Image 1 (cartoon, rainbow, N blue to C red):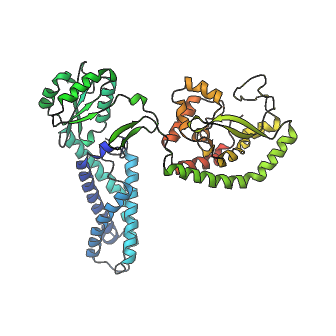
Image 2 (image 1 turned 180 degrees about the vertical axis):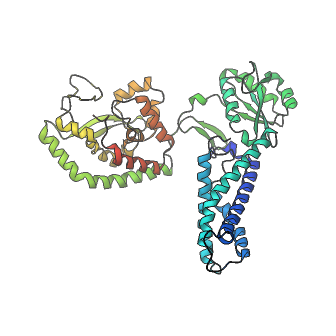
Image 3 (image 1 turned 60 degrees about the vertical axis):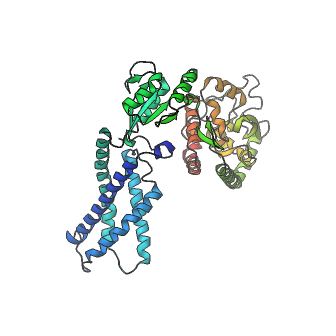
Length: 472
């Protein structure tokens, strides 16, 4: 039934109004049914005997006409009808339950000021329990009805894909995922054989005939760069046509992190990659880093003094160790750590990763690395603005040069300020583990960054991230 929740996609917002109409109608029917069922169970079936007299049914009936407008307000808060192509079942249950919770909360707020009538608490509890059940059940019927309408071509948008290349096939597959919005891929246009997704209906120069014959509403043009001349000819042929034309640039494989399209004074600009920390997001993260970093430094300063003294007394050399690392936008900085190895640790081996049972560690240094206490001085890097509390771990430049040549998308991790802890670290991908998995988790963090995500990682760091089998 449903594809993923893509309610932030502008293209999809323009379609599926029929879906919203049917879903809202289904929800109204479900709410009315749940309301009457709750009333029947409470005052007719009397699952718990009524001792204080029977209320007038008209009071509850009038209240129902208050509930329905409140439901509309609550659905705006939860964005219930923004996803017109459907959600998976757990998501739909959560969204419906959340909307009902807001409805009850707003209704309670309304009745707090309107004291001429009180409502049975058991009735309200029954409505809260029955509501999600009725809503989800009636929605199943609504989606089944919508499916039948779409299969019969009701409110359908007949689409022609200009191109038979892999990107064109991908466009067709994506549109098929949203059949519930009325998208109906009729076929392809261009050279090539029929495919499983849709047949080839003609050559490029036959575009006007195919559009008329197949009653096409929209054309998605998906050509590779080497067919630019053919694309221009096709667009010229459609210049005086009433069909909607959408151009899909063949740069999808180059679109990496938070890609999208912006407008620069009327000029469309395609973003291939960008950091999520722009505008207010950047300053919010900076303020949180400085505030929590200062609190953490004050809280851990006695422990840091003790660690520094023990390091100094148990091995020759300074207590603090500085190492060149690469951070945001590839800028290098000196990262602080408590020294956990001999001062000549890399004299013979050169720049290598720490390995299990590394003989270069001091006895106390092994303990520091295992517990991650050697990382505490990086709070100074946070207050200097070189690092964040949460983010991808910074790497040494020599290893960056090695990995950027062998690991796809490695440099995208530098779109975010480096962190003392990160999503990869709390999931166990630290030390001498898979670089590919670490990058996967780092990019997931950057793509899905939020302040709440940062707090979750900080909590997981305290809960399970300080001691790790891969920290050595």
